[in-house]
Amino acid sequence: EIVMTQSPATLSVSPGERATLSCRASQSVSSSLAWYQQKPGQAPRLLIYGASGRATGIPDRFSGSGSGTDFTLIINRLEPEDSAVYYCQQYNHWPPLTFGGGTKVEIK
Amino acid sequence: EVQLVQSGAEVKKPGESLKISCQGSRNSFTTHWIGWVRQMPGKGLEWMGIIYPDDSDTKYSPSFEGHVTISVDKSSTTAYLQWSSLKASDTAMYYCVRHFQKLVINDAFDVWGQGTMVIVSS
Image (cartoon, rainbow over all chains, first blue to last red; front, side):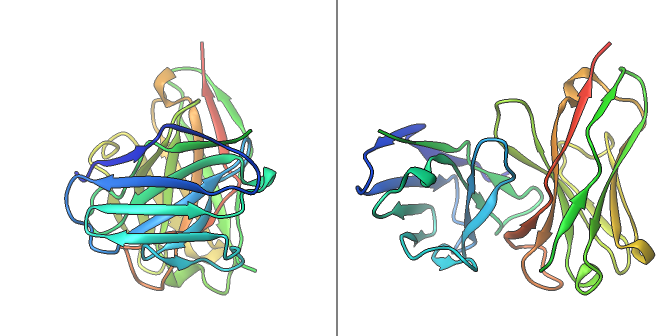
């Protein structure tokens, strides 16, 4: 099973600034990496697929990068509505498809 | 717009059986893998398994195989997740999801149901 490790667990950022979230895989997952945003009381929403492709309707403030074992999600010009938990997920190796433990982004 | 609409919250006792549902849009339901994801209270996301609605091919996570059954009714474009004997540890939110691309298992989930909360308590 591929273990996905996200850091930091919690990130506190001021509005308008940049948030940088990391995700590391226990072995290479190529570019088969997705990022999801989950706001309180809501289902997760796909942000990024293929490590860097933005899903439909996702603003260009969100960008993903990386390949192999190390991935990054950057949120530029942070807005209050970006307060959420962000999960990475690998889909290169299954079963199972695996998620990271999540990074909670708080707005100062 | 493709949607997955799940059945409502359930409160059950340990040992009881349960079947929850996820109804999808007709236009793409049979061409994409449909999966289930568990989220225990205050915890992260866990992939449980998937089914291909066109032929009912099913695959499970080793962590969930034997504990749940995934099925589908193609005629009503509805997928199901069921338990024969619930445990308190099954208390969680359960989401159904659609795989992004047609026919592809190794894929992100582009559509999520709203979730079904299952509470198992004596």
